[in-house]
Length: 272
Length: 272
Image (cartoon, rainbow over all chains, first blue to last red; front, side, top):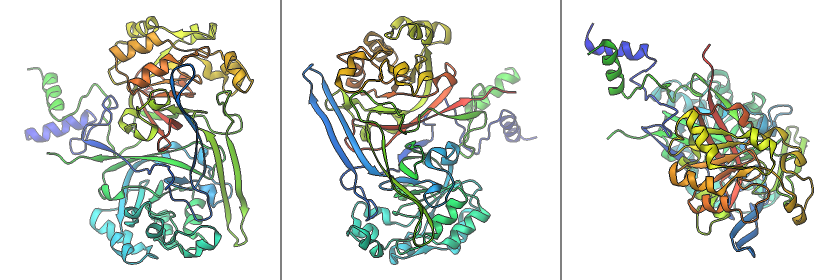
């Protein structure tokens, strides 16, 4: 046996695989990884669906109190489905998980990034096809079972410009037919569910169904299978196609159909 | 050199320490750990400070639409500082981090749990002392630099009974003097800052200052040092004194003085 073979065997026997980064919970974030924040901040510019009011922050106090100490506090109001947020399955599927019922283990794990930005930037109404998933797999290997599948359309670069991001700056129900942004085709959603069983789907647009959808079939398909969606995910351009760990923690709203979502990615740093 | 010494050296050279659990990002949650949710859900019973309104959820739609598909959506209003939430340093320290400015790396890492429940349950106005921290260290070793320090008073068991949890069920400014629950003494906060430099402090009560505080000195001390606080943290009774990894992700409110916080703990499972 060659020395290198012996080393590998010893490492394996110790539960250590030298070909993958070994981590310890005592060192966090783990060496060799950097933390990226994939959530947009909530503010006056945060993008909501045309029928929803925007984010509203009321300043309750900001300044020194009579007792002499400094104090700030606010109250806020928001629709569940604005900004970087999660759609819980019950959003479009009766009796499925509300946001507080989704097991946390379904909201974290290895992520893959399917980049369709070239096609989607050329066509605002693009729907991601099964062929796009197959093309990704031909280059990067199979999407692992239980992965979090992130869809990069390239529209994240337009945030928070409503017109460029989703096709219209108009508000109210009459603006909904003017929405134009890419999404995941129901056939591709079905293919993922049947063949790759993802934990969750994320996208850098306001919705996993494209802007022109009227029946939200991709929502219906995914949510009937209790697969939640992350929408308005930020900075997908900074992630590699695979090798990322995603941790997405929503505000725990009892019986919520969705919630503001804080998403972080642990991304391998290039070795120097 | 003994064979075991050689193995250790080779493992170390490969970045692998056999005495600690080795993890890989491709397996998540990591083998040997379970995920615990340390956040309470937001609902009608969620506990807020006596001067704040409670959590308000407005149902915008719940049922089948005219188009034939099922649909739920809600809007909610909340004070930043109710339920399981984070206090950003700017809450009590002018110019320090607002919630969106706190680096995510300051909100995750190894956690220790200081259990003072015996003393605190015997005295609602108990303030955790330097001696309590020293006693913990005498048993468990030094609190690691940069740890997240969780303070277990035992009052979490009373959630959501306002009277038992915080001493009063009354509302409004006149109820504030009736608050009785334990907290962290300013001297102990100062000791932690000077000697152990924690990333953050968490507690299973409504506030890191005890209920009878009028100047909130522990808040002022910690926040001047940009150390945020987690309040109303759930289920601290389920964590070991050390060996836990904590990940706490707040809603990203621009210029927020605090925010709803989703906290998870990765806890080693007993080996069978």
